[in-house]
Amino acid sequence: MKIVVKVGTSTLAHATGRLNIRRVAELVTVLSDLKNAGHQLILVSSGAIGMGVGKLNLPGRPADMPTKQAAAAVGQCELMYTYDKLFSEYHHTVAQLLLTREDVDFPGRRQNFENAMERLLELNALPIVNENDAVATDEVGVSTTIGENDTLSAIVARCVGADLLVLLSDIDGLYTADPRKDPDAALIPEVREITPELTALAGSPGSALGTGGMATKLKAAELVMACGCDMVIANGQRPELLYGIAAGEPIGTRFVGRREDR
Image (spheres, rainbow, N blue to C red):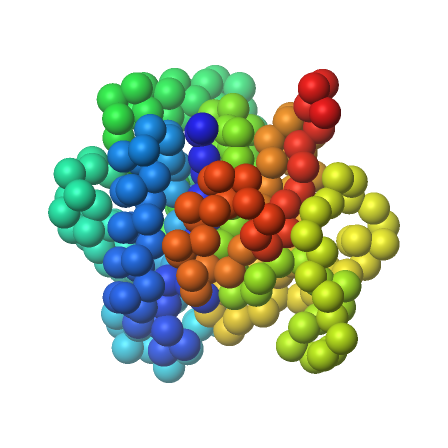
């Protein structure tokens, strides 16, 4: 299969903003093994700003735009250095692609992106995609960029014709209520349609370092389901779950893509 995996800041980093070395190492091991098994993998990785916060020893996620941009520029280096080092141990070559809204909205630039992705996969590389947060600033209200990586990962999945999109987050899936507040909240194992009732279940952003909440994940699900791609929300604290997800096991919440054979 062609699988896009999105990993959030809460999975990659400790609350301090510093890299969660054990978690990232486990993630890279599983992704490398899935690639060895014959799957094509694309990683959409959040965490640049969060990593930059830790690297620059800032007290927390900055409020002003220039400091966010600076943190993103520093943190992106940290991310790619780590990924390159860890994937190289399993003899996999990584590639970095940093996008802005214009790269997916304008047909010519989108075609260039799609061509590059197709060729990278043909060359057996593992593309690692992030928004170019040093120049793309929608996360704080500028409407010219994508804004967060749940949506970006859905756009990437559509562009490459992925079979599966996996969003690794700090929650096990979509629940009937917020499980952090309601002990009676139940996991919803499968979704075949995004209804107004489901949309109402979406909450606000969950972590101090991240930007995406359940609302953005439902938006991502709508985008990929429409083109026949499945999407799964699962807990990024357990990267080994990717084995079962790729095998179609009932893990997290699976949003079933609309295909003619279903």
